[in-house]
Amino acid sequence: MGSDKVIKLGVNVDHVATIRQARGVSEPDPVAAAILAELAGADGITVHLREDRRHIQDRDVEVLRQTIKTRLNLEMALTDEMIAIALRILPDSVTLVPEGRHELTTEGGLDVTLLQAPLKQKIALLKQAGILVSLFIEPDIDQIRSSHKVGADYIEIHTGTYCEVRTDKERREQLQRIEWAVSAAQKLGLGVNAGHGLDYRNIAPVAAIRGIEEFNIGHSIVARAVLVGMDRAVREMLQLLKG
Image 1 (cartoon, rainbow, N blue to C red):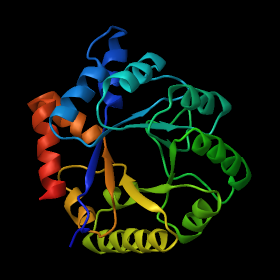
Image 2: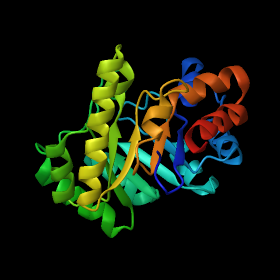
Image 3: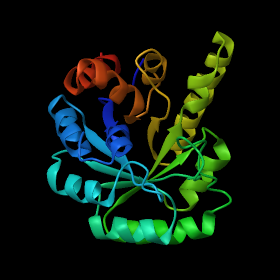
Image 4: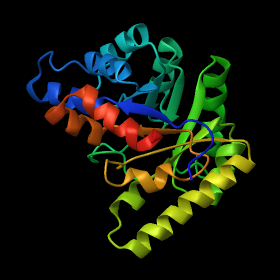
């Protein structure tokens, strides 16, 4: 069964910007998409401001901060440039993610254990500014312990491996791994979100795990919105999440 808390949906509008950047024009506008997602019931909006600005642009983040009525979650790499942008724009939360220039999308979780010293310093700066900090990590006990040590408020569990497996046995193993990770994080007082690769077909078993507060979903919602509209795409995902 799902958690007693109402599960939240954060809608990632990066790929609305991907369509816009394909032509270098002004449409479709990710800000307009975010507003439609909120009107359909989304609990928050997520954008990933990448170092190469391949989709979301600085202007998008600035306008979203002034426009949306729910919460703004800024995904970003652990760089001085991005920390400075976050401290200027003041999103409600920041999710620190690993970032490779040649990847199509974020591949794997942040190695918190390896990056403990810079993470501790940067997280302290963000928290002093009143920004909640989440770390995008694999469902791994050592990474969860390290996330607690560096002062994170939340972890976001990378669900990509679960989404990619082919057999029922592998799927059960991955779900068990996520369940253990949620339990370990809660024992340390960390909040738990999840995301990456989740879609309308594979979300239900993960949504049934107790203790995950919010799912951040982008590509599958935007892909469906292209066909049926943002309102319907968001409502259908909310129905699967919240029953």
